[in-house]
Amino acid sequence: MDNNTQVQLEAARALVTALESNNEQQAEQQLIILTQSQESDLFQEVGKLTRELHDALNNFDVDARLVDLTENEMPNTRDRLNFVIKTTEDAAHKTLGFIDQTLPLTADLKQTAEKIDESWHRFRMKEMNADEFRLLSKDIEAYLPIVKQHSEQIHANLSAMILTQGFQDITGQVIRQVIDLVGEVENNLVQLVKVAGKHIDNKTKDNKPVDPIKAEGPQINAKDNPDVLNNQDEVDDLLSSLGF
Amino acid sequence: MKILIVDDFSTMRRIIKNLLRDLGFNNTVEADDGLTALPILQAGGIDFLVTDWNMPGMQGIDLLKAVRADEKMATMPVLMVTAETKREQIIVAAQAGVNGYIVKPFTAATLKEKIDKIFERIDS
Image 1 (tube, helix red, strand yellow):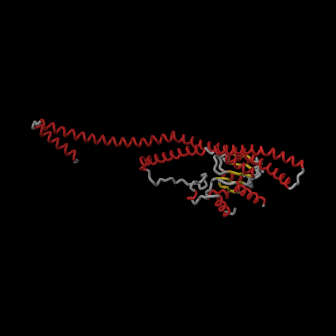
Image 2 (tube, one colour; image 1 turned 135 degrees about the vertical axis):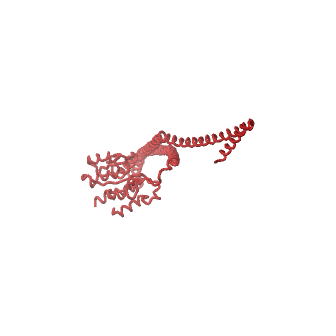
């Protein structure tokens, strides 16, 4: 018998005695004691329910956030990552485009310089007649403005290539958002497992066979993985050990 | 010499194409995975295949196996240019009959060295 019941019992007995002896004041006092203990029980019960409701709501929060993550954030993240692919691809093509524009300019400068250099050498060795020299002068005269023009164009192309590298800032920001989101999903899943997964047997781990040659793309932590080779030299060594 | 370059990223195809052009190979065609590469190869006229491994559709390793299984292409030189670096993968590629294996990111010198080696071996 707990303390509260004891108090109630004593108050009930005292109430009966008070009523029998017609002691109104005493009866009223005992009634107050009885209702108070009743209220205290009620409060305790309400408190317990409130706590349970609070926990349930908290868990519901986890669920709701997970639903939101799955329905909204994940597709959004796919879009973001596709944006990263598209942005890096565009930047790479733009850079390659400027390189394609620049290489013929340098080739042209080099070719003409070689030709003039050869003639100039012949002139210095006094192997050149007057007509040939007039031709050389014309070539040099034509070459100098071309050097200026091409250099300006090369400078402009290189500057444009610098600007194109701005993709790193943009994609870096997007990738950071995705990293945050993955962290949040991880936390929520851990919460969910804590709440709902208490009954899940630890032994029921994923025992699916791993395909040893499944394409994985670039290895991020290659140094820590003995199954992964770190560079071209290691690949060459392995191939030569196989008789390549 | 007509070369087929297979990679799902157009930038990588463009890089390889430019490097090959610098090495004197001007005749190149492109495909973005094994499934689009195979009909081009089967149509004939390709002398050399440069392929990535990890691609949607048909992967490079399966393309290599398909090429080796087709008697018309069984001896075609195949160079794999890939970010896949697991020991097991390289062994499987070697067993499937790859002629060279280049790990991304790679240099122009590596590409030249491997291509030279492939043609040395064919010529000898």
